[in-house]
Image 1 (cartoon, rainbow, N blue to C red):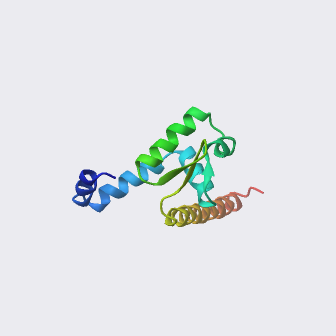
Image 2 (cartoon, rainbow, N blue to C red):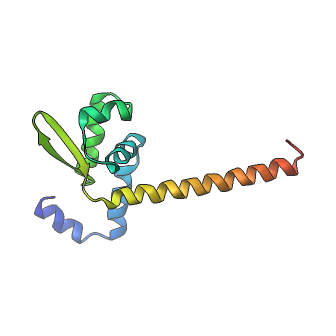
Image 3 (cartoon, rainbow, N blue to C red):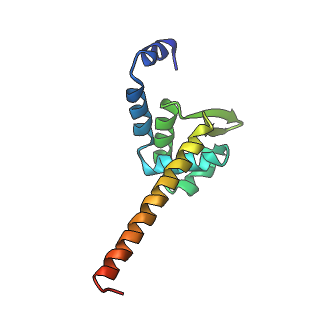
Length: 121
């Protein structure tokens, strides 16, 4: 982040900065990319079949994550290798996964109770 951008970021409310981070995460392909990178560094070519989107779309999504400062790159020969800028991103994804699992479990339990109350099998 250039000095000017850093200076501007330091004067913005943290809630605004958090919102920008979550906007950068707000795409299924970007979440999948981050999940892959949570397991370790990856070359772009290795990610494409695992994310399941076209190479050009993958590049766009990686660009969003890079501009948001979520991932960083390095060159190895002709390959570009991506990694998480902060390992805490893996923790954030794990927390989100846990929250979703608990919510789905509660919804499943509620649905079962409603079916039982309605006399459905």
